[in-house]
Image (cartoon, rainbow, N blue to C red; front, side, top):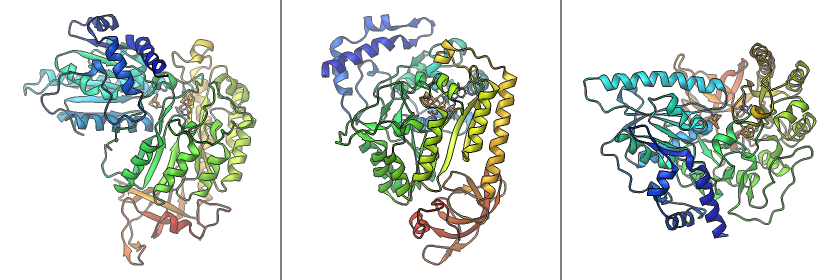
Amino acid sequence: MLFFQRTKWLTDLYRNSSLYLCRCNSNKPRNVKDKLKNGPGLKEFIIASSEITEPYVLDPPNIPYLTNYPQIAETRKVFFDVYGCQMNLNDTEIVWSILKKNGFEKTEVEEEADIFLVMTCAIREGAESKIWYRLDHLRGFKRRRALSKNRQKPVKIGILGCMAERLKEKLIEKEKAVDVVAGPDSYRDLPRLLALTDSGQTAVNVLLSLDETYADVMPVSLNENKVSAFVSIMRGCDNMCTYCIVPFTRGRERSRPVTSLVEEVRYLAERGVREVTLLGQNVNSYRDVTQQTGATDTQLAKGFKTVYKTKKGGLRFADLLDKVSAIDPEIRIRFTAAHPKDFPDEVLEVISDRPNICKLLHLPAQSGSSAVLERMRRGYTREAYLDLVDRVKQKIPGVGLSTDMICGFCGETEEEFQETMSLMEIVDYNVAFLFPYSMREKTTAYRRYKDDIPEEVKKDRHSRMLELYRRKCQALNEAEIGNTHLVLVEGSLKKTGQIIGRNEFYLRVVFDQAEIVSEDNGRRLVKPGDYVAVKITGARSSVLSGIPLYHTSISQFYREVSWGERSCLKQI
Ligand code: SAH
Ligand code: SF4
Ligand code: F3S
């Protein structure tokens, strides 16, 4: 078994090693052949592989070719730019944790920065355009710094994340100002990659890993006083939806051991965090295979299938939710993104049972047409999806739903698009993220289908979806006027000074600052991290407004509420 793992690790290394480049000033790529000639022998690989087969790695694994790199001589200040999804935000906190430990400092002032690290997204062409635009600016900044008379250190630019993984060394070929390219699984290597730039080299590490979860790296928040925190519970995705680049940029699905997750949530609880969002591309397929349980596997619900073999044994998402929500009943638990295929009754039951698990479920439909869903390889039909919605509503009364939808996918006819519109009419989504399709290289759709829907048609369908969504949201939100919501206060609005927080459905709720009754029957002002009962008096499609009534807690607010009609809202 160990031999298998070792050889597998070696095979992976060799398969990916052409992606591991480092260049010196001469601009001649030093590729894997040179590395193998001068690099470590088989013995060293075997030592390293036996180290990384351990489930809990408390210190970074001692990978031979990562040792003996030059240490930075002086402190260097890093400016972070973050694009993309919440996973990128959390990854930035992991990167910052690694760099802080290695003596780097952080700055929010461009002029003070020695290093710019841009955490990138590749999901749609538009996401990448924004990054190219930012790189234009950084190139100019770097040039100005080089010409400046104040003898400041030369600026270095590092590109991290999904676009780095997608474009690899091509990024440096296209944008000469870039010094470092690091994919999502190579952040431990960043101190070394940045040290290489000191001698004028550019460095690329875009190796994808089968087991990197950064389980031992405690992320350090970029904003220390945050009420909410993200915790990545898994990385990668095995679903291979035909339109999606994520499996290519983030690699194979792997889950973090439950023990390290519980530890992290406890740590956050002790530091006053009031809301934890569990993150992953497909959180509800979470499996901690290091914990074998006797539990039998629930089969996928009728009408759902996967392209990969369903995992067997181990702790599952329902177990994780159970453990994490029990740590502190006053910490709200959210999770994203989920896939409709992985909602066995056990998951719905634990969500329904625990007052501190938010009752907003992300069920990304992507399309309302079974034919389009088939082309997208989503593994379910419109009917199976609607059955799931019914089951969810029955198990969790008052549940809120959110979705992602794509319009203008390859071959989408007007009739197929109308099925998406009708699904949005039937299912009352509280939150929806709506996207026009953007063809991505490498995906199955790129190889198999034609991006044949004209841009203006995509645009038109997108605006029709948006209009429907806003109209429906407005009606849903107006129906809340008169209800009282439990709001977790995040801060105040710069412009008006009003207090802003989120209700259980992650909808923003604003209200005026006031001295209100506190838990001990005194009175005090509202501050970030407070739970406040707010009576809703106004509604727009994406924000509610109200009057603060009293300070409360999750348990106090829901004490008298039976999980009946509307479990998340208390009518008073
Ligand atoms: N794993 C998550 C999130 C993936 S990315 C999930 O499956 O829900 C977020 C969303 O971007 C997807 O849900 C999808 O709606 C959208 N998306 C992905 N690839 C896209 C593409 N090529 N064009 C347009 N939208 C896309
Ligand atoms: Fe992309 Fe599909 Fe995986 Fe989500 S589930 S990340 S849409 S491949
Ligand atoms: Fe973008 Fe990568 Fe997230 S492509 S959406 S940053 S997983």
